[in-house]
Image (cartoon, helix red, strand yellow):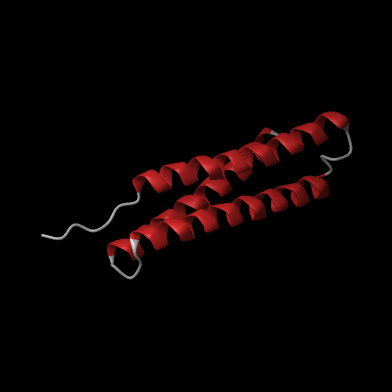
Length: 103
């Protein structure tokens, strides 16, 4: 169960950070404006959180975590932690987005 927590949170964080990195590179290359990059990142993090949570719920049911009360509660906690990780990554990304410097 602990591995289920760690893998799902790691996957959510990694995909959100990858989205941040790709969008930040587009902003630095000036193919996106800063506001557009932040907006796309917001939408990407919301979608990533939903997809990772749905995938975690599906995997938890396939593995059989929904059969007992304690593991079912822990599975719901894992889904909430996935959402929390994506929201924390969203906050980090929105604060760290920057425009290219022009001299």
